[in-house]
Image (cartoon, rainbow, N blue to C red; front, side):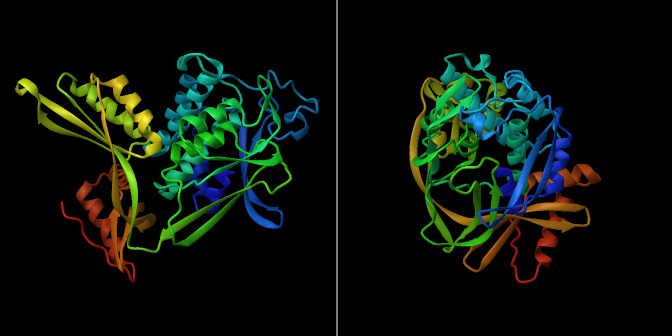
Length: 408
C-alpha cells in the first residue's frame, strides 16, 4: 500500500523496476496498475510470487484462523533470513546510498522488535513473514520510491489498528501482534484501536513509519500539492487504502522542535568517528558534525553533535555508546525555524538531476542535490563545479522562478 501510494504521487516506475531487477532475489515479479476501492481510483502495486514462495498473506480465511491452505504448505513456503542475508540483498542492489540507508533502517527496526518479542539476541533474529520475498520487495520498493521523490519530511499523526486475532508463523496471535506493539512502544507511535476485526498495522508498516516519520502533527494550514492512494490486498469491513499527501506550508517558514545530542571525546580514533557518523546517518540522524575542542589537561579532542527527532533520540544514544568511548551524552530539545522545502527533478543535457527547492515568501531558492551532481560527474567524466553550474543554469531558465546561487 505504501509503495503504491508513493508511485501514485509520482515516483518513477522504471527506476523502481530497475532497482528490483538488480536484487539477488528470485521468485517474484511485480505488476503496477489501477483498481477501484469503494469507488475510489487507486494505484495497485502487486508482488506476484511463484508457487515455491507463496505465503498466503492475503488469504483472509487462513490469516484469521478459520481455514486451511490447499496449495503448498505454509510452514515451508518461504526461507527464514537473518539480518546478514537481508543486508546482502540490499547492498547488492542497484540503489542510491539514501535508498539503501532507508531500507536498512526499516529492517533494523524490525529486527529489534522481533528480538524483543522472542527474547533472543539481535544477531540471532531470523525473519519469518518479514523475511519472505514479498516483504523484502515491499520494503525496498518503499525506500526506492521515497528516495526517488526526494522526501525528507514525513508526518504521520496516528496509526489505526484493528482488533481480534491474526495467524502468524508462530500461531494465532492477538492484534496488534507483538512486533507491532514493540515498535509502537520503542518509537512512540500513536495507535488508535478500532472496532473492526483484522490486522490494519503490520510489522512492516509499523517499521516503515518508525523509520521515516519526522513529525506527528500537521501544520495549522497547508496546501495540497498532490495526493496518492495505494490499494491494499486484504478485504476488511472498511476500504483497504493508504492515502499519502504532498503538502506545503502556507507560511514562509514553520517552527518545530528537534533534539541536539553532544559529547566530548579525547580517546576515540578517527576511524571510529568516521564509522559512527555513517551509522548515525543510516539510522535517521538529521545532521552529524564534529568540532575540535580542548579538554582537561589541555588534551585535543572532538565534540560530536547530532541533530535528530524525538523519536530517534534513544536509538542515536545507543549507537553513540556502542561505537565510541564516551560515557555520557548531553541532550537538549531545541525549537527551530525551517523554510518550506521540496524536491523536484530538472532535465539537463547530461541527464535528470534532483534539486532542493526552498521558499521564503515569494522568493524561491534552488540548490542542486549533491548526490545527483556526483552521479552525473561520474557518468560523464566531468568536474563537480562544471556539472553543478549546468544544473543551476537549468534551474534559472525556468519561467517565474528566482534561483539564488549559494555562496561557497
